[in-house]
Each structure stands twice: as structure tokens, then as C-alpha cells.
Amino acid sequence: MPKTKLQEVVYGLLMTFFMVLAMEFYNTGLRMQGLTNAGMLEAVKEMALIFPVCFVMGFFFVDRFAPKIAYRMFTPGKDKPIFVTLARASVTVVFMCPIMSLWATILFKRPGSEFFPVWLQTFVCNFPMAYFWQIFFCGPLVRWLFRLLFCRKSGVSPKKVSQEGLRQEHHISV
Image (cartoon, rainbow, N blue to C red):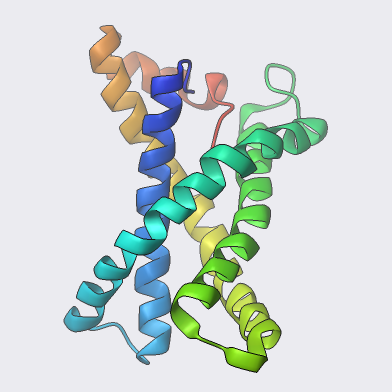
């Protein structure tokens, strides 16, 4: 989807924002045995710390090799676009979830001598949420917002872009 460096940055920022927001709400809810208004405020405050970490990890590291791995399974332009999209999203989550669980363990959990078990539990709890949020909610939302934002700027009608849908899509990041 993104065709320029600016578009890649905007796409990455949108994806990072919605992934981090959801994961912070999720983890705060787990930690507090339920999400409350106060918990949501705490999660938003934590976002200030974890958002830049997530963006840097995704944009500068994972996005450099995840497409190469995904495109070994499915080839853009050759295979069905939905398979390309799902492969790209899946590979990204497979790498981003343990990395971000590691950072969350370091920044928020203070595990002491129990570092590995705390990180492992964090990763195992986060993976299903991160994967399903990315596939069913965040990915489609960000792609829609991105098309809406850049269609208006390019003069292409959003309806035409919606009809093109996943046909041209080949870039997803968490």
C-alpha cells in the first residue's frame, strides 16, 4: 500500500498507534483484573513510553525482514491478495509480539530474578490478542484509514480504492 517513505512512516505510525493502544488496554485490564476508566487513563500514559519503542522496533527492524519471510510463502501479484496480506500480518506479529513483550517486561513488570518466566507468560498472554486484533480489527482499520487519507490527497475516489481492495495491498506492519 505505501508507495513513498512518507507513506511508509504514516502507515507505520497509524499501525503502531492502534496496536499499542489495544495492547495497553488489554494488559492493563489483565493487570487490574478488569479494565476501568482509571485503567484506561493509566494505559494511555504508558503508551507515551511504549509507543516510540514499538515504532522503532517495527519500522526499523521487523519491517526490514518480515516481508521477505512472508513473500517466500505468498507472492504479491501472483497469489491471492488475502493470502499475501495474512502472511505479512502473521509474520509481523510472530516477531513483534515477543519483542514488545520483552520491552513491556523490562519497562513495566520489574520481574527481578524471574525475568524469563515473566517475559514468557507476558508473550503467551499477549500473542492471541495481538494476532486476532491485527488480523480482524487493527489491520483492516489502518488500511482503510490509510486509503482514505492518501486517496483524498491523490485525487482518487475512495470508492475506486475500496473496489481495488486487497488487490494492490502488500504491506502491513504492527
